[in-house]
Image (cartoon, rainbow, N blue to C red; front, side, top):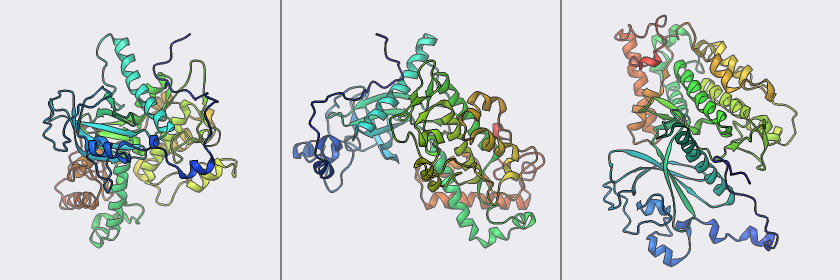
Length: 474
C-alpha cells in the first residue's frame, strides 16, 4: 500500500450504512451540539469554565487569551485579553486584537510571551461542518507539507517562500471544535486597497476644488477617468508575485482554486504580495491533467473558471483564469463578469461566457493596451487549452506603458497605502478614506507648486502621485 501524499487531506467519505438517517423535519429544525462553536454551547458548566456570556458570545480562543501551542489541551488559567503577555508558558500566545472576519473563522493579531515585540497572525477556524473541517485539514496539509518537503530537499531549515504566507504552528481547542493556525503577519489584502480607492474616488467626485484643479482641467478628464487607481508598476508587481506563488504550487502539483482579492495580502517588511488561504486547494495526481471535484463550486463564483462553475473540473489553468479576473479588477476597479451571467452559465441557461468587453473610461492610457490584452486574450479565455500557463505568463511578463502617465491622474501604491492603513490599527473605516484623500490633495498641491517636478516628469518617470516611491517601483 502506497503512502499518502503529504499535501492530500486525510479525510475520506463515510461508508457507514448502518447510521440512521435523520428525518427531514428534524434536520430542518434541529441544530446539533456538534455543529456549534465552543462559545455557543448551552452547557452551564462550560459557560462557567470559559466565563463567557450568552448575551455577548465570543470565540473560546478570543475569550481564553493564553493557551499552549501544538497541544490538544490549553494550559488552564485565568483568561486575559491584555497585551502584556504575562503567561508563564513560553510557547503560549496572547491575542491582541481582531484583524479580519471570514465565513469560516476570524483572524487575530497575536504575540508570543517570549517575544512580545514580534507580531503574528492567528487564524481561528470554527469547525461547524464537515466541509469546514475538510478545508482546515487541507490547509494544514498544504502549509506544513510544503515546509516538510523543503526541509527534506534542502537537508536543513526550509527557506521562506517569498510569495506564500508561511505558517509556523497550529493547535486545537479542548473540544476539537476550533482550530488555530499561526502564520506570519501581513498588513492588508488587495480588496482593502481597492475598496478604499473606490471610496476615495466617490468622495473626490463631490470635491469641486479637486475637479476644477489645473491638472484635471488640462487633461479634460471625465469622472471615470480620473478615479483613484493602482499605479501601473503596482499592478505589474501584483502580477509577478502572484505568478511566482502559483508557479511554486503548480510545480508541486497543487491548484489553489481560490485566487481572489481577499487572498492576496501585502507584507510590508518584504515589500511583496503573498498568497494565502489554501483550504480550497486540490492535488493533481501524477499523470493527470485535471480532477473532478465533488463540491458544487470550488472557490468563489466571481473568479472561478468556466469549467469549474459548470462541471467542477479542477486544473492548473483554473488559477490562470482567476488571476486574470484579479488583474482585470485591478485595472478597471470592477469585476469582469456579472453575477447573473455566471449563475446563468452555471445553470446551463447560456452556452458560453463571452470575453469581457472594454468598458467606458478604459484605463488603456494608464496601463497600456498590451497589458490589458494579455489579460483578455491570454488568461480570460473560455477554452481551457487556449489559456497560457503560469510559466508562459512569467516569460511574457507584464510591462508598464512606455510613455509616462499624465500628471493629473491620482495613483496609489501598496507602500503608500501601508501608512494610511496603519493609522487606524488596520481597520477599514471613514478615517482611512479621508487620510488617503488628504494624501492625494497634498501631493497635488506639491505638483502644482513645482516642489516635486523633478520626480513627477511624465516623460522620465511613471510616478505621478507620490514622489518617494521605492527604487523597484520607479
